[in-house]
Amino acid sequence: MRLILFVVALALAAPVFADSHNANVADAWLVVVKDGHDEEFEKAFTDHLKHRKRKGDSRAWKTYSPLLGDDLNHYVIRYCCVSYAEMDEYRAWSEKAKMNDHWNENVDPHVASYRHYFYELDVENNNWPEDDPGYTMFGVTQWKVKPGRGGPTSASKKMLSDHAKDGGWPRSWAWSDRVGGKGNVLTIVSPYMNYADMEGPEGGFFGFLAGRVGEEEAGKMLSDFSENFHGSSYTVYRLIEDMSMKE
Image 1 (cartoon, helix red, strand yellow):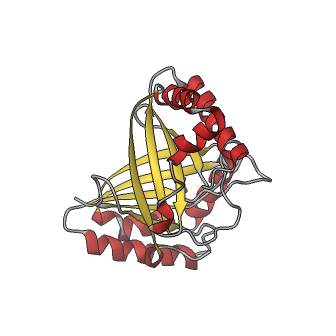
Image 2 (cartoon, helix red, strand yellow; image 1 turned 90 degrees about the horizontal axis):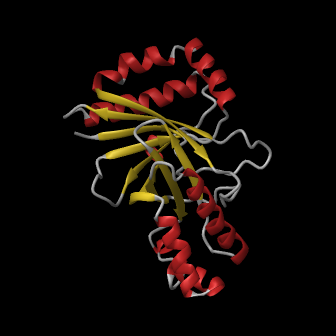
């Protein structure tokens, strides 16, 4: 079964909004495609995006596919970012333009099930360029937050982010928190131009942090951060231009 993530602005390529701290919400739909309907879904979905553009959709949806991990049979389709108030405006446009009718008539016959989440970007602790230099790949790490560890998670995240900013860590990144579903999930995304860009600095983030606070303190900081979670997962997504809308 092919798993399709229909994501409005999952933090794959989430810009930091300097003039609107409220525009930090991602509206995420997870769509499971029926067995044997892959080609039909992709064609119907692409036609649906063209239909949205003709109707004046204000959002340029982007589509991604995973390159690494245990689950390679899904896409991510996203737009970023909006405020909760803007979601009301967009929903009003969608209803007036009968977007759901077009989706239900053309795309839904190829879909097995849906899930729905919000993602809230951490604007204060993120470090993302305002202008996209042409990123094509995105490393995504997700952690399952232990119950009652929201406060310590936020404190550790801010501490690590402050060190990365102050010390000039040569990467961009975007944190986000999932709203909805089972348990709290923290996500961080790092963009890459290509495979070679994934290599990163020698020693990794631990080496960078140890250069600032010493190995013992760096180990403690990363251990304190890890103690907030049950576990983590990592994958890399590639932008699919042919299944994306132009700005």
